[in-house]
View (tube, helix red, strand yellow):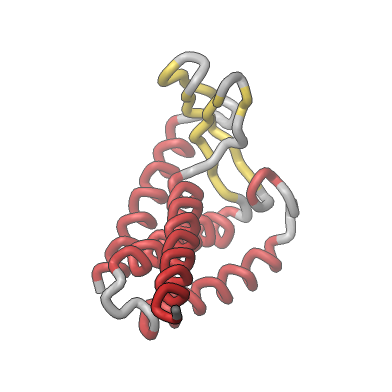
Amino acid sequence: MIYYFIAIAVIALDQITKYFVVRYMDIGESIPLIDNVLYLTSHRNAGAAFGILQGQMWLFFIATIIVVSIIVYLMITQVQGSKWFGTSLGLVLGGAIGNFIDRMLAGEVVDFIDVFIFAYNYPIFNVADMALVTGVIMMMIHFIKEDRKEKKQGK
């Protein structure tokens, strides 16, 4: 049950931050938080990560429904004592739903975290994106650890 609360917390933080960006910033406006490193930049994305698949909303709706269904199924059937795996699923679920809400209500996703890494301007993202990426990385670590454990037990 805690993993659903993680998802709800991600959704809430994502939607609250996006609300403030939409309410108080013009599109394209940028506020430096750490010069040459971190900015709040109001941006809209009608596509997927890095702006690919612009305007393909039907694809995102279908993909999100499938992903959410798989995540909920895994949360019900596969978590069993693995806090790491459950947390990763909660993060992915919250991130997927956070961006889905934007697509449903506005037809585009609100992005605002603008990071420069060694002078490279990383694509602008949001809280839901951070949760998705973190959750997927955690999931990959979980599967690698499980695979190693199975191989060790098999020897």
